[in-house]
Length: 380
Ligand code: COS
Image (cartoon, rainbow, N blue to C red):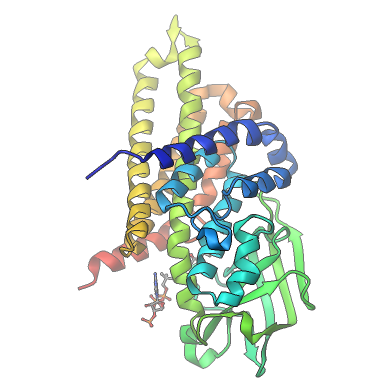
């Protein structure tokens, strides 16, 4: 067993750290307040290869491993989780899904501009009445011979307004249940496709979350991913990797808040000494750093398994469950260590606390991760 990172992995982590400090930190509070999408910053992330990190260079990607992706996601998320969710969705869900299951034509047409960050993508599974219960899709894609006719609504779609390409999960044959679901590539601007108003959110407020409405949108058959009826498996496979990305986001949110709390605790004095010298605070920091390290190990293990082509459904779910719950707890403690300052925006930790909450909800709630984990450990 080797816990050392490679030189390349260290280089990627440091590049992401520098980028986050230099490019994402300025204006992060304002973007959160104004719900402003970090458009310029995302463009630069694309130029640096952060939006197609694991994609083969022949399709415009950086050709890196998943461990490097986890390291970069942690660094970006320490500073700006609104930017890191764009990175996670584009890498783990959209690029990975297309590269793994797309046709050569789909890869040339969609994956190349997505991996280079020329455009960004969105993954559309959740609906007003189907989030956790993902087989209950109400959006329909009726087979019309050479095309599908897409109708329905998708909810809470990250990159909903800014994406150019959308991977949409829809029901073609109700009688076949989950085996009658398809994944379709939808382009912005297709007739009958409308983007709803932007959601006003508790956290990750810089990210661009919308409902999407489809009314008789004609999707050519060549835009279906995989065989007829593969859509649900596609969603499950894709989300399994997505969970490693969101686990790393939660890890970064927690470690960002912890680093701020650690620094503050060494500066702030109370009762004649730095608060870090009071055991009540020192023990909080001890717990926080231990939990962060445990989450980091789970994230890296899941990433390593993915790189080794070992099934990572279980390790990814464990990483996401633990990291998300940990991020919520650690960010609350980071606010507590900051006292009154923690409650005001300038100190960043209140934002990180708000950002942490979504990691327990999207790409499978903590409860869904427990279903995945318990089914896996209980199967014969
Ligand atoms: N990889 C491949 N196939 C998978 C899979 C995975 N990780 N997980 C499930 N499947 C397959 C099953 O094997 C089954 O196919 P077969 O009937 O051919 O065996 C099919 O998918 C249906 O699975 P299952 O019967 O387990 O479905 P359930 O309705 O019980 O739901 C959960 C399973 C809860 C795991 C699934 O609905 C889920 O992940 N929900 C959360 C979705 C989510 O993350 N939503 C957030 C929206 S994205 S922000």
